[in-house]
Length: 407
Image (cartoon, rainbow, N blue to C red; front, side, top):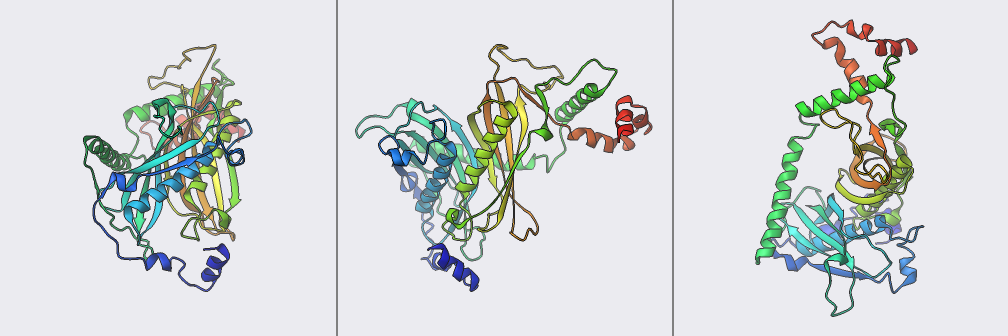
């Protein structure tokens, strides 16, 4: 439906999803993996004008554009499994892993299928991107560029509540292995939610590490301590990059009033890349993405706010035992950067903000750089009066006293 027609229906208060909602009754007959298999060849090597829309300024494939395509491919695959009568949304990009980076522009083959569905509302789709071989020519393991898994959820088009979908059946030992792996991942995700820091307090090793990092920060600012913060150690608060953009209807999904999840994913990835480059002053190489969670839909016409932060570096500032890590090769240092992108949305009138997702990306840079969190300093100050030790320790700490006078 053209946007102008969808917009008119919206202004009249009519249900834009009515056609989808009136689809035939849902068929819950179990499906095979092969039922949802889908394959598309992207002729980038043969069509220079098509490749022009996929190439970045350095002559390489734009991964963000491929991620957007993969979300669309997952949508096609999941509807082949669920059939009509449901509205499907992307819940998460569980993982993207680079297998063999491309060294040239060539035709690409997108393929994927449903790999786990218990019969409830969620479904796992596994996709891969590989070099497309000529007809009859066998593919090779090194042809695979990347693999990824998406989790999608089926909703009732009118009530927006989760609905049951066909259960996935396997018929070969290999399909059974794939299904069991998907089942194990689903259980692991549920368990991980229970142990999240939003649900449980830090364990002993985590608390000890936080304390060691806090002590290192105090040492950096203590005028009586010769230890000083190295130039390659940067405060986490100084690594942030933010953007704000209005969501135009050209990037809407099939439900008409919401933005396509793949576009959202592309925007967060490219901001994460810029954040990593700004932090390291070097060109980052993408390694993986996991997990990327979509929490709420992004309406057409809303303002999307993205904030990227370097949250971890490997090697880190300190190891768990408090020792300083060293690069394996000091002449050719390599650091892994973990970038988190937080997403929220407001309407144009800028009412209440609503979180729309959290996205995690890992890059590699040819630099020795480290990130230093500082928030725990303020948390520790908050806890000092409640310690069993005398509260006046706050006033006798030379570093904290210096900072108090300066404020």
